[in-house]
Image 1 (tube, rainbow, N blue to C red):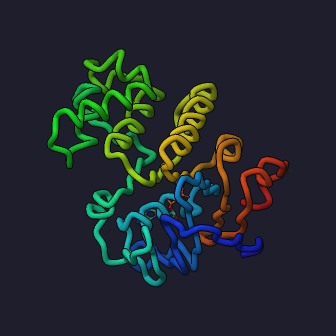
Image 2: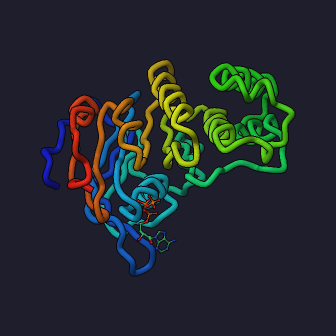
Length: 244
Ligand SMILES: Nc1ncnc2c1ncn2[C@@H]1O[C@H](COP(=O)(O)OP(=O)(O)OP(=O)(O)O)[C@@H](O)[C@H]1O
């Protein structure tokens, strides 16, 4: 890593040390150190194929580790299943729309809280989500497949929020949505993190969108972290291509 590793001021909610991982014999991540503090928004930037999605999937235990350690809320989780990681408070929103296209908006949101049996609690969470994304309330009976790309993206974030995660892992939330909606979506992500002390780890190629909201960013190149800096420093950086 070329940049100085920034000091970990508070106990991170999520920390990976020396993460080396991949698919079978194909190594994708090499010795990755990464941490996210409670309430922090952290961006991971990098080109196609840099290993961003693999990093998120490794952190939520969908991709096996070859070596390294992962701690979630102070506990080692290398051997914990992804289902249990979700129950413990981690959510992942993949780049491909993780919605049920044949179900209504409301039914999709309910599935986000599938571990909750109390109907009143589900209703309360839905009211909160609808406050954040009004279109989901206005069109709650719409079949999700009829939503536009940007609306589907809002729905996928809404589904993730229904589980009330303590950390959201977001895979390229800007993909397929118009620049104006990208801005609004990223501002919403920032507000949610602040209001709920929720952490966010967002991987993106859209440098501007991420540096606009992130407390800290990493750059991932060929499966290795090559830079870590504050969001403020990243915003000042004019040239990125030489880092990628
Ligand atoms: N299931 C898989 N099996 C084998 N190799 C894979 C698999 N998924 C991804 N890879 C490889 O791992 C590397 C990193 O892929 P990954 O999807 O993590 O990159 P990325 O940075 O998220 O890219 P993008 O921005 O294009 O989504 C690529 O070379 C890819 O071909």
